[in-house]
Length: 192
Image (cartoon, rainbow, N blue to C red; front, top):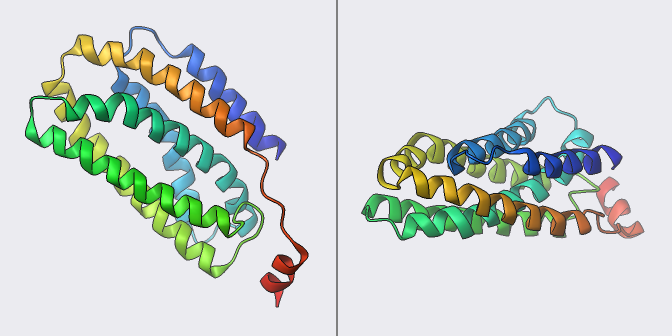
């Protein structure tokens, strides 16, 4: 648990160190690196379940921080753009986030931050595949479209707002980083 808190604290510090004169897109891509690393762990059948459990404790708060800030700052801008395709990507991406949040809620209800099962494994793979494809489409299609249709000055202005939202959401997630209690019956059910 200490490792997870240290990692989240380092991420929080890095939000303060992001370059002031950077467009939002490289910052989003930087946050994608964290998410891709965790997605790869979830999708690797050779990774031990205990490592996957600890990875959920990092993935969930980082995804939540990133997704909420991205929706409020970046997707809202896309939906206001003059390009129809860009607007559709903003709407589609919000829907993909909503599905991911639903899966995260279901996984948390299954106590995946403490125990692992085949049902959790299947659901986490579904979530990881969704996020992997979502990130790929953003980087290959949405970001180039945004750079084409949204003025560079606006993309620069969005970065500060995005980083402030990230700080806010990460602090909220860190306050809730303690995993739920597992009852004795949950443990018995898992092993029998």
